[in-house]
Every structure is written in C-alpha cells, then in structure tokens.
Image (cartoon, rainbow, N blue to C red; front, side):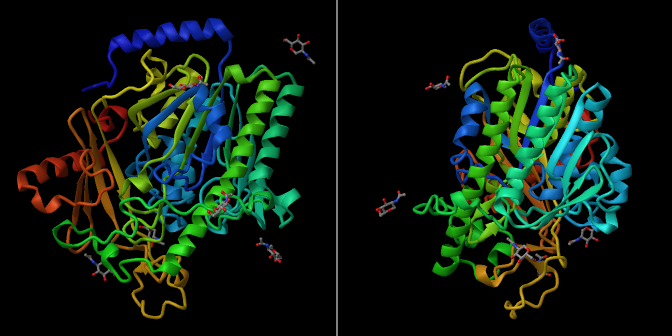
Length: 515
Ligand SMILES: *[C@@H]1O[C@H](CO)[C@@H](O)[C@H](O)[C@H]1NC(C)=O
Ligand SMILES: *[C@@H]1O[C@H](CO)[C@@H](O)[C@H](O)[C@H]1NC(C)=O
Ligand SMILES: *[C@@H]1O[C@H](CO)[C@@H](O)[C@H](O)[C@H]1NC(C)=O
Ligand SMILES: *[C@@H]1O[C@H](CO)[C@@H](O)[C@H](O)[C@H]1NC(C)=O
Ligand SMILES: *[C@@H]1O[C@H](CO)[C@@H](O)[C@H](O)[C@H]1NC(C)=O
Ligand SMILES: *[C@@H]1O[C@H](CO)[C@@H](O)[C@H](O)[C@H]1NC(C)=O
C-alpha cells in the first residue's frame, strides 16, 4: 500500500484548507504541552480538570494514543523527529546510547518539527525538560541550543522541581528552592507568558510554535506548597493487575518473576504516597495550561491556535508487583493522553483511532506547512481531526505499530541497602520499594501492536537468553493478566515475527504505516 489515505480524504483536506484559509487567513499557531511520565490508564487526566475543559471539551480526546518506546529520552527523540527508535538510534537515557549525543545533534536533531516549522516562517519557543542528558559536558554543554528554536529555555538534565539550571539561549540561569521564584512548572508558565507578551507587543503577524514541557508528574514528584495536602484520601488504583502474581503457563518475563514478586504493605504505602504526589504536581500543570490559554484568549489568538496536550510515555504503579516506573511493554506504560483543539477540528469528541507519538511531528508539520513529510516514519493525523464524524468513532481502523525498548544497566545501579542484589546488569532497585529491580540489560524487547475490527493484540519478543515471548489479546484481557504465547502455534507466531521484522526495518511513512 503506497499511501494510507485515499483521494477522497485528500479532497476533504482541500475543502478544509480552503475553509480554514478563508476563515483566518494566516497559518495557525501551534502550542504543545509535553508532560513527563503522565499515564492515562491510572487516571492521570483526572486532576487536570481545567486542561480538559480548555482542550478536549473544545476539541478531540484520542482514546487510543500510544508511544513507540516507553522511556523518556528515546520517546522524546521520536516525538521530535517522527522517527521510530531504529531510525533515531536513540536507545536509552545516556549519551552513550545516543541521548543528545553529537551523532543525534548532527543527525536527527537537524530535522525535527521545529526546524520544519521555522523554515516555514514560524517563530519558535521551547521551555522545560528536553532530553535527559541535555546540557551535560559530554553533549556540548548548555551552550548547545538545538536547531529550530528561536527562544530556548531548556532544562539541564532530567526532571526536577527545584535547584536546577536552565539554558536561556545558551546561557545558564540557576534556580534554587524558593517556591515563588523557582518552582519549575510555574517558571515555564512565566517564560510562556513573557514570550506571548513580547509577541503581542511587537504585533507579530508570524505564527508561533510554543512547546512547554513541565517536569510533572515525574519523580521526585515535588508538589507546590499550596497543593501538598490535596488528595489525602486517594490511593493508587487497584486495577486487576495491581500486585498480581504471574504464574504457570501465563507467566511474564523473568524480571517480573524476580523477588520480591509481590509488594509488601509498606511498599504499597510508599506507592500510594507517590501516586498522591504525582497528582499534586499535576495541579500545577493544570494551572500552567489554564494561564497560557487564558492569555491566548485575551490576546485574541486562541481561535487561531492548535493546542496539543500529551506525554512522553505512561507509567505503572504496582501492576504485576512492580512498584513504580515505566520501561514495560504493558498498556500502563505505553498509553498516553492526547488532547487536541484547534481551528476547524471537532469539538468535544472522542476518537478511538490509533495514533502514536511518531505521528505528532508529521501532523504539526502538515498543520504549519500544508505538506506532509514522507521521510518521517509517522503518519499525519490532520485529516482524521477534520473528517466529519460522530462523537465516538469505533470501530478501529486497521493499524499496526512497533514498540522498541532497550533495557538499561549500570547507570542508576542498585541501592547500597539492597545488598542481596549483586548482579551488575540489574538496575532501578531501591530499598524503599522492597529492592525490586525494575530494569536490566536483557529487558530488551520489540512488540507489534495490531488493531483491526476483530483484533486488539500485542505480541512481544525479548532479546534475552530465553527468547521470551508475551502475547495478549486485549479484547478479552484488557489488563494483560494472561500471557497466551505458550498456546500459539508456530505458524501464528511466525506471522507476528514477520510483522515485527518488517517494521524494525522500515524507513519513512510508506514503509512504516502498516494496516
Ligand atoms: C536546594 O539546594 C539547597 C542548597 O544545596 C538545599 O539546602 C536544599 O535542600 C535544596 N532543595 C531541594 C528542594 O532540593
Ligand atoms: C498592529 O497591527 C494592526 C493590524 O495590522 C494595526 O492596525 C495596528 O496599528 C498595529 N499596532 C501597532 C502597535 O503596531
Ligand atoms: C477522607 O476520608 C475521611 C474518612 O472517611 C473523611 O472524614 C474525610 O472527609 C475525607 N476527606 C476528603 C478530603 O475527602
Ligand atoms: C460534551 O459532550 C457531552 C456528551 O457527549 C455533553 O454532556 C457535554 O455537555 C459536552 N460539553 C461541551 C462543552 O459541549
Ligand atoms: C545505553 O546504550 C549504549 C549503546 O547500546 C550502551 O553502551 C550503554 O551501556 C547503555 N546505557 C545504559 C545505562 O544501559
Ligand atoms: C537476564 O539477565 C539477568 C541479569 O544479568 C540474568 O540473571 C538472567 O538470567 C537473564 N535472563 C534471561 C532470560 O536472559
């Protein structure tokens, strides 16, 4: 199949472009909120009431939105470029795994949605967390301002709420721990406000691209003081997978079977507190979205602005006895919120169509330039947002996508208190979480997720000594309790193996879009 869309849809696009062009006569502004570790499965959108009111009540809620890799730096790199991991070659959160490496800076970073929109006349602004190793010596320091950005205030290193440094167009701005001056989510809001005021005061007729990337709800989950006592009665959702022990023929990969297999009451209490603190940090994100959208409305620019709200990947809290993290092949970690509003698109609509993070870059480029870059692996979903339809749009159109993950070792290591764990290839083991290790070098897998009218499955193949396979039928088993791989015939396995192989070698939209 050479193109995922037929000419009828192209015709609709032309109608829309004409309607759009005549109604506002300028290119739309684009505003993206990119949160850090925000799940959708565990109710991550619930505390974001103002966000939902501003965005999805006036736009689209994508109820089947996924990432193609469940870890920060690789996922953020894919979101920026519209490329799968095998094409960004960003394998983990370290410079050695290409996170913000010279090779990334000289390669994929030279062609992102920002570089394309800037070429098309956009004034571009980025504020907040970028890539985990941004600003490190080994990757050119904070003097390196990624191509494509006119106004840059990137966070040095990984998410923090206090005591951090921003690169302001290549110069350091240090922040301490005063709530009023330094709380990062609020600082990002102030950078956004001053960008918009500047824009308004020079009476700019250029469109803008603004990306705001708050640290929330990533660890260390530090809430703003006014929110520190919210949600006192909340606990992490007890989904059917919460502290569920995998056994027998339906068991999961080896890491999940390592001791302790279940969480103790003390660990559960720590997980519940993390859950509450995550939600508390989200209340500041809700204020950020509210503040920026109010200002856009005041400046009469909201009607010409596409607003996207999403996350770099999901999160789990207690599922299958894993206390809290990402890096797993389950929907908790792969599903992300995706809310979009903008001129000409549906209001107050839920769409069940499958979209992934690699589809975002081509979508933003199409919105800003009218052209879809075919060398990006993702597929623009602009037409999907413009196509007339009812509030809820089942059934799923056919779509398969690839998930790639490379297990980490070494960098974060084992807590001194976890003396029983001496294996250098196991990491993310902390005493406060019962020393359950949550990643390892051989926690490396590829999956194909297949959606059609009759199917919703995920098939994953580990690169470990066992060549372990997990397969779930999500239509019957939405919480992924039963690994059905052992009951699959070799013939059926080979169908999925072949799909994975084709996807792992794909370059560009036409090869990577698999119906
Ligand atoms: C910030 O750094 C100061 C000085 O090192 C330290 O006293 C303070 O506890 C830190 N605050 C936070 C929230 O990490
Ligand atoms: C801003 O632009 C509008 C429309 O082009 C124009 O009428 C107005 O005088 C301009 N204001 C300033 C302060 O330049
Ligand atoms: C929390 O639960 C307690 C006991 O059920 C109740 O008295 C209290 O009002 C609840 N607090 C909130 C904020 O809901
Ligand atoms: C959105 O739709 C729901 C039901 O489809 C309706 O109850 C609600 O009032 C709508 N909200 C807005 C802002 O239109
Ligand atoms: C990241 O990936 C690189 C390249 O595969 C590898 O050498 C390095 O050890 C990895 N880092 C971690 C922390 O696993
Ligand atoms: C995976 O790696 C761990 C840690 O090095 C090792 O103990 C385990 O046997 C390996 N398992 C498989 C299935 O490869």
